[in-house]
Image (tube, rainbow over all chains, first blue to last red; front, side, top):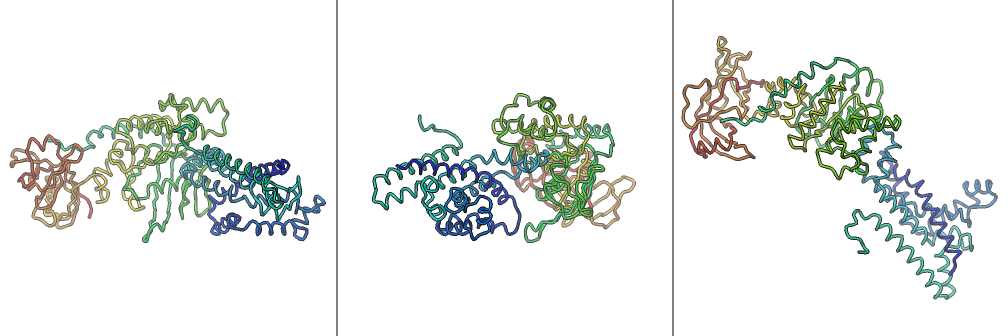
Length: 224
Length: 393
């Protein structure tokens, strides 16, 4: 089994999940509380990666990061190399790809917070920021856990975007799913099976942890 | 037979409440002035709230049926809803002014607001809820103020419990304490005690009154229960369909209502159209004929010409029932009637009678049983002159 690919994948997933908390929370807040009339357009854009084939998304990201785009040129001027086929490029592609899996649970849990509590917080003199951290966020804990876990697990298993943006450079952009694909191409079924099983197990453990944490009441303890 | 009118027990409360007003200061820094207009396209016909009033320190009751705009008005004062036009000021501080384009954010208005469903933070303990609004003071002072309000509202023992783990009455106390501990300049209470039993309610009200003695700020208290109006009363503002229809002391507004809508709210079960037949100035009474019948009753004298149309309101609890024609009574109106139906409502018996016009009478269970009343019986209605309240039509 390719442990290098494994570590790289976990590093990518952790980084993406962490960054998505930072950018996902403000986006989700805005989507929940904004009264802008064109808000639905933003919601649609955020949800696009769910329905788009990963290759389409990956293609656009590749073009956007390439040396012919403003972003690509700016990055090249800054660092001396392009974003495409690098780990950083992979992170950016994965962020876009997993964005809805973080934003949607966040936004759903914000929307479930009783507006009266937010009003009460304001009448008690709390700023919007204080209201967010003391009331909205603690009451959205389950949505937060769900969003983080889903974006982590989703990034772990991505294939199309990685292939388009990152290619297959060992130690840089070669993730587990690419590795499995390679094994199958090389008719190395035993190795592919092993890696696939590990990925399946990790995904199952992560999702079980999410559902367990989100259980409201532990009426029946699973080990009793 | 007694009329089981609920207010009887509450009447001494009025004088007590009025004394509180008189002892209060007249410091204008804590007088609320509000002139608010807000339109909603809620359903097809829409709804407009348009009110103008001032509230001095002490309790002012906002009374009216549901949908009258009471909660909307509170939201406008707190800044949770922006009025279309108007001005809201606490003394010299302007909270909202549409002509000046001023709209102070909710968090800076220093308005305490206790919501109908309380809106306690479910993830915080009672103490954390109360300390929530104590933002810009140091920790020691915060602890101190929290401790003293916990004591004042007798919820010290609930400090570490969450709202889900305490009773309804205790939750109300926590919500009140949370709003009061921040030293608001205006307190808004949206039916905060509606769900409580009478005993708990009066205890909490006593605590609130005691607090208001020390902190003379205007308190707007929304209710649609008339028992509460009499129990609390200093001033009442009656709201209907977004407009103020009456204003004054509970006694003025509720006991001698000028409008039929107020009368219904004030508990006049019987409201009849009537024509003035004769005025007896020397006796201070009038004779009125109830429309649609030949029934003539004697009422107190009001300034109304013979032949003019009025409305007469009689509380169902103010009417006596007799099985044979009574003699030797001071009551001037004794009318034969037929009992149409009897229905038990809690510990009250509601009788519908026909004395030429349909009339509602309230009896006790014991009275019904001792008189062996049943539908179809011929009885006599006894109504004192001063139980007939005259209103404009």
